[in-house]
Length: 140
Image (cartoon, rainbow, N blue to C red; front, top):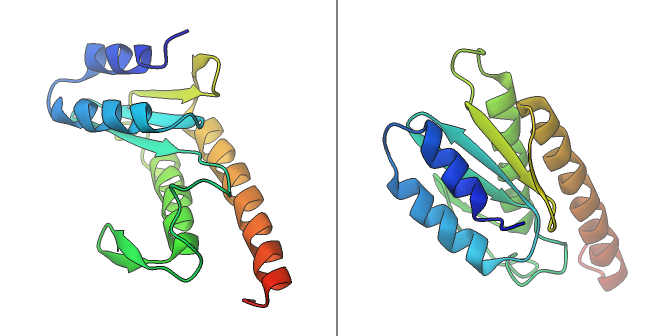
C-alpha cells in the first residue's frame, strides 16, 4: 500500500488549506517511520512517530524552534502528544473528519481516541528510552 493514499483520502474531505497536504507530502517523503494524519475540513496535521534514535529528533540538550517557541527533544516529543490529546478532547463537531494511521506497511482509518493512544504509547516508549540513555550517560 502507498502511504501517499492518505493525502488523496484527505483531499476528498477537505474544502480549504490544501497547501497543508504539500507539507504533509514532504514529511511523509522524509520518514520511514509510522505516522498519524489528521484531516479537518480546513487543513491537516501529521504526527511522525519517529524511533528514539532517529536523526529527526534534536540531539540531547539541543533546542530547536517549535510552534510558539523552542524546546529540547523532550518538549518536541511532548508537543506531539499534546496535539493528539487536543484533537481527542475537542467537541465531536470540531474534531478531525478523518484520522489515518500508517504503521509502516498499511494505512487505516482510526478514531481520534485510537490515534491519541497510539501517540501516547509512542511518547512513553521514546521518553523511557531517552531517560535510560540519559541516566547511563550521566545527563540525568
